[in-house]
Length: 187
Image 1: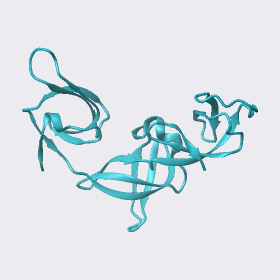
Image 2: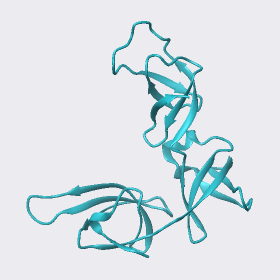
Image 3: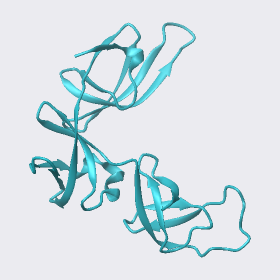
Image 4: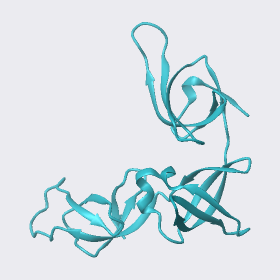
């Protein structure tokens, strides 16, 4: 496995650290007035979900782990576990629903997502970047309201609240970015 310097860590990288597999969630590069620069990294354990804040100097070497990515189809949720199926081998795997966090409502029946494996152990799941949703509740369109940054609240069919432009009405289909959880475009 390749070793990388502490200042090369990026969000989304998977590292082997303290005997566990950790995903870098947030990385801040700090250059204090006195002393050397370092990367302040927020890590999330891929096996038990615990969090850790760690400082890596540029001289520190860390083990970067490459995960194998496979497309899996979402089947159903049962007792807090999400069940996915490999569309080639028809093998089924289960992952905890809390793995997706606040993005869980965007997971739709039959949706194909990317599941990351380390050896044969499923560790992480990534939703498509853009998902189409229907607006079930929003304020009516007001004619003449064309101010540049005037967004209004809307409730999607999955219960998530997002801010949408004033011209979007109820029962319209929109595309939502699952990374930022914001309105992207009309569907």
